[in-house]
Image (cartoon, rainbow, N blue to C red):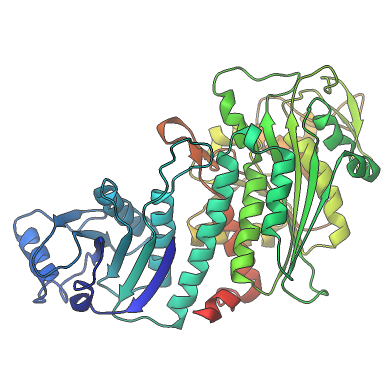
Length: 495
């Protein structure tokens, strides 16, 4: 899907040959509702008859109207222009149009266009129109091909914001694609091939390690999880070098369990099909690297993806087994369904070699986080206050919100073991916190944060599918590290 932005008045936009024109109408419309163009006249009449209200998502929809060349016209109220109100308005407009075959859409802001309005509109429209096609015999791909934004005042800042928004859409949809694929279409080897395909170009490098290399590295925890799987593990190392080599990188570590049966501690059958989404952390790393390739910001980023299935065959690790991690710490595996923290802990140790400025791991780690925060905010755990604040701010600004959770040392009491340095699970209480406390043991040599995305990366029910989160949060954080909101990128300069 292609996005454009133009400086145009509504009186000229209505003469464009579009399949649909969406007009974003503000609550404070005194200056525009008195206008003489056909849209203003329609809105004025609708308000007088009580058919159009100044509330978020209120819709006025018409088909083939004199003086308006677009077949479909949808006027929708964005109220005060906040993130929530814009998202509500764009969703309402799309719901009014989704049964039509709209290929080329215009989206005009009656009030002043802002970078926030523009980026929220782009991400909302992309998400609403997304269509998964990869494993369907008769796929129904997205019909919407082009969206032309327009407003009375368009400047370089808005053009840069649109470039960032389009890159983010590419990243989010890459994450969705791989998270939505069934496990037999998303093996560790396939995930590695996807990483290689994304990490092309002079600024990129991608290495893929197999079982032999991982064994030589001493990643005993990662190897233990992979023992029961017929599909060989892959350890994927992606590098984006957009800045000087002397600049310490940000390291992103994505949990890549391409299917999670629970191992010997096998899961119940109900909804086990959704365990293909246990690699959403890995998918988000792929999505970030896709967006980095589009924008080319001046930052160094490393992506680490430990990828394997968690299967229950005769060689699978057993409850009570003790394994040695890459750090040298021994781990008593009390529950083989707590495998994500085992693959992550070795990747966190591997991250030390990059001398990072920060390490962020991303994982669909615990059901307890779903109970605590639901699908609204990802769980944020961090040993570094500045890093935590930066991620929280990035989440709020991007609309991909997170919430900081505690890491008190008392929570680690349940991880004590008589037979190893640490157990991989504690009791049922505070399960997301004790999981984070386990990971913290392996991330003491750099600023570290953990994002538990078990509740936010996936939708269940009728709308089953990946959300692409937290690509938005991560990209906003990374771009903030470059220029604190004034990122100069190749993509922005091109437009």
